[in-house]
Length: 132
Image (cartoon, rainbow, N blue to C red; front, side):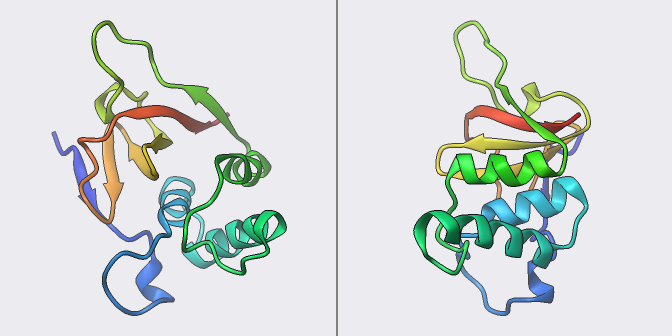
């Protein structure tokens, strides 16, 4: 079973260069929702600008702003499963498409496999968004 799929969610179609982009929310949203990366990036940048005045979503986005954007697309926030003696990980997520919130990171999880630009399987999951 594959537990990690390397993908940038379509970022390469719009931004060139390598290295950290700070756009994990846009990547995760594009991958999980199937929407175009630039559309996701622009929606998140607009939400971020309303709170901070910054014109980019490259330096992270607040959970509340991310939640507001995802709610408009029919997604809801759910707490990670409570497990005896350990924290939730990607393999504890439900089947289907979700967006996991981890320590300083967001990632798409599809059928319990991380879909991201780097392998974040080691990160614990605090909660996730799912389409209702």
